[in-house]
Length: 380
Image (cartoon, rainbow, N blue to C red; front, side, top):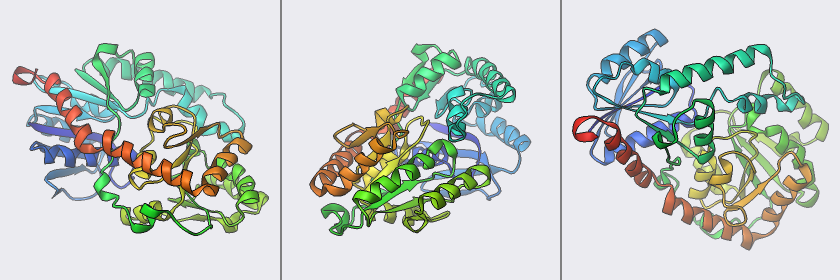
């Protein structure tokens, strides 16, 4: 089957959606499909792991390229509403859409500004959500099958974009577990008492770094040697200044390291050398970080919200907590840092669950079945 994976995001701004698309593409190519990935970007086209990557330098060019490439494919799989719009009219091609987030969801915008103590929405944001809702509702009527990355996202697609329930199927995100090979330290557990805490990509306010920093002083009271590494760039602008004020006010700057942009290999190394991973998001469609941590045999402490409820098994692979309650949040982190056997058991449970349910080999098989039901002719 000739498959076109489309996303209007920019290659140079590596997000979880882009990671998802590339991993899915490699898995589908491994199943014998001809796969092309098309998105915006300045990089020249290339072929890697059997996948053809193409990039459009502008939005206008992206729309033209989608039309041209779609004519050669049996299934067009879009990963945002704009990509669906660019794919129309689809004619005799199967058209599939994956909802990673529902960007017309007012909860998404509220989660990005809760650090300000204000969850009200401006008129501009209300209009943006309203316009997005109308656009999504109109465009997604043309999609034959809709994939939601969690039940939380499915419910939002039904409620906000009015996608009929029979056309939606929940297919969780996957992880390329083989790329997270366990080291001897990861298998046996770190013997030191430093208490290495890892969080990933917290530069967006909705990812909840402020909640983590508010809980960290309480963690340090119980585990004085604990250290927090934030994999990714430090927040900037107003939120960045707010974060710096928290670091200064709590006097924890020496305990927090921001890595900046890092390679995949370095990220894996950080996962493997950590004791636990923390995901303090205020809004999350699913939570790829949870799967990556699990693939490395690491337990998580995560916010009890959205798709994280489906990614974490509370009391088995980690803890789900109310991250706005600093004492509760800190207590969960301290418990895992202080109890090596429990930490290792949770980590083993997490890795076993990832290998059983969330490998891309398994997930791509589910997506392949959806493609077969979405197409026309022999694919219907």
